[in-house]
Amino acid sequence: MTHLYRITPLEKKSIEFVIETYQLEDGKYKRGFTATFLYRWGQGFREMDNWVSDWEVNQGVNCEPGLGWGCELDDLISVWVDFDGEFTEEEQEEITAYCEGELEDEEGRCGEAWIFDGDHAWEIEIDEVVVHRPIKIDIVDADQYNVVIEENVQPKDDSTTDWPSA
Image (cartoon, rainbow, N blue to C red; front, top):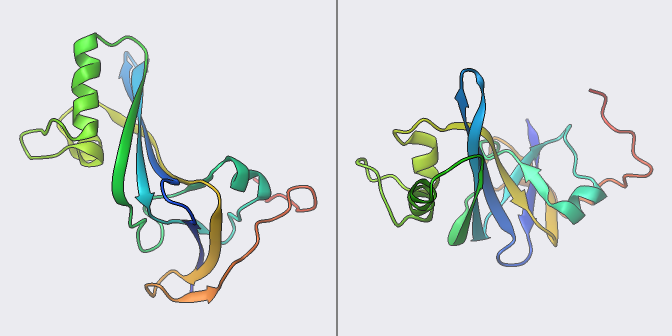
């Protein structure tokens, strides 16, 4: 039986899906954008050897979107797009429209689906779910949906905990 940490926000509007993209030119970074999708509800998961620390609770707990039985993100309430590098105003408006769901590609994709599967030259650098405090941490069974092993697990105290070796 495999266990995971499940991190759940206790307040609305406290979970984000962050996707960082990039484009290369001649093998070097050319430009990129970061799209942050803020949801009213959801959850994130962490491996047991990637425990949650006090510091992370205060900064936001990063979780892998593909881990566990899904983040179950619900009720998208806002989208921010930040650009890095040279973009025309038209490029920024088009990317923002795709991310915000105001524009769809020929397959009907927008938002996160457009970033991951759209017909474009953007590569994914990082995709993560960030859960902001206050949070609840439970240990769950990774293979059985919603089977909780232990509820209300406390984060690790940064000052007294041995950090995992790299």
